[in-house]
Image (spheres, rainbow, N blue to C red):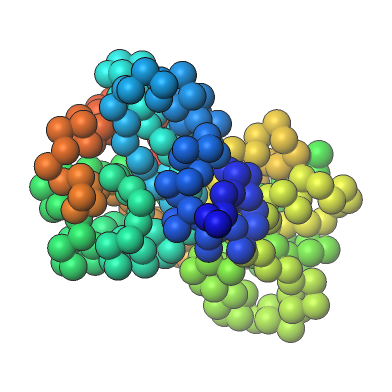
Length: 279
């Protein structure tokens, strides 16, 4: 029996994320997609409207969701938008088993898909870049992380330091070592499988002194939900990760997919990504 996972589970449960790509077709039929695309699917699928499946890494998800609503309203083409780790999307897309027409992932991953013949070079659209930011509880003072000295002081003062298990988390572990704080931070370090879990932990655990780090786009989506962006980390250690959208091989000649990609290049679509924190 095929497992069906909800949008929330895809974001917060490691096992569910692993099941996601293989369960995508069943999830689509059950309406188990993130809210924005699910609303479009439920209102149009019964009418036999054309549809596309979009897989977005977490950093571009929060711009893709509202952009999907506008695209569907303008074209009548329903978009089913779902998410997973970028490296999971890359893995399944390289194997030719990702149940998606269009993917949004970092440029380096798109280049691998193109080289492997799994994505069409002619369909690539730049989405923008995402920076690493610092996150705190909404009711906590905002620590200074703008300079290396300020970041060091904030790391020392923090009662807990929260990082993801993603490449950005690994990068910041090296930064902490570079600052000579490996031992000082080790005792108060907590790591999370995703930025969503990290932000959820911040929001649900009251008390001062927690300092987390992750993509600014994922921090900003928790505005008004208990988490605030303290600022971007210094340029000396910043990772500015560019993202692209691409049609996978199965959809390269699909006119609807090309319409979507053309739309993602417009100022109207770009505004939604910019508002979500994509530069």
